[in-house]
Length: 104
Figure 1 (cartoon, rainbow, N blue to C red):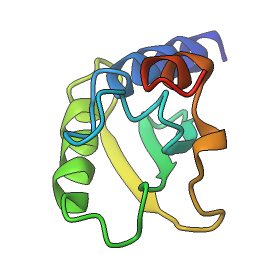
Figure 2: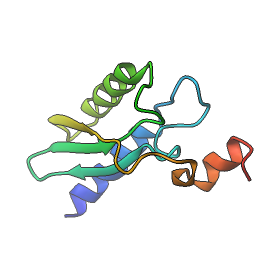
Figure 3: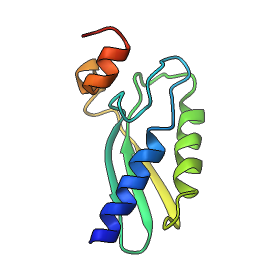
Figure 4: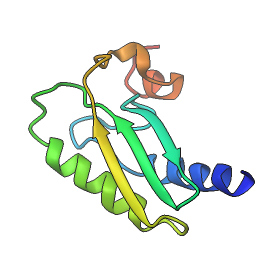
């Protein structure tokens, strides 16, 4: 259990290194990551969304997430579930993100 928690911490750190090129905030603080599930078999399932369903760089962001998480020690495979329910709103952003974007 402790190992999985440490792995999830490393995954979150990886997610915080990924930015939407149009917004100067990482995808984790932006609120695009709904769930990170690290499993005993070293597979990882990430449930995430995008700021808009018709995001022109969706494929790039998803590929970046997959490639970034696959490089983390202790991860054998990554599965990404892209969802749009619930839809993303700015209320999902962390206080850091809101401050960075001038909403606070």
